[in-house]
Length: 201
Image (tube, rainbow, N blue to C red; front, side, top):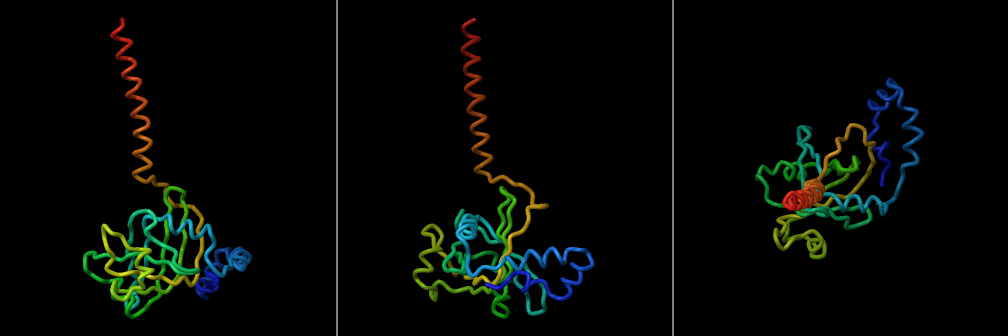
């Protein structure tokens, strides 16, 4: 993989960093952020996601961001530096799909709102039709309940972990439901005990 800073910190970016006083800090930090492949922690984080945001670009240079989601683990690591997920029928605007026909470079945000973590991925994406997809790859991302129409494959070029600052902490519905059910159960038990106590008076 390429170093994220070398890929993304172009001249205009470094000029701004120098003006704002962050250049030296990043120069000291990012040379150490080199890795050839995804680590075990990276893989575990990626494969625990329920949704991602993917940005592509139009031929005129307009950025377009799309949300992709599914059951936890819908995004799979299918190679040292390759991720993939099933692609389903949406609103049939085909903007991301059309963009990838002209430019395969994408940016992906993998968000963990519960733990306030964010993994940024720069990569090259391909949408492969179900008919043309490798059978082993299709088996990894496919679902019997909702078969994939296509497979989105992204070869990771660079990645970077972001700080948690300004990421809101949001709780998944199942976590909230679990806490509410536990508290509700305790309240119901207390209520029943009070009823018995009142009846005995």
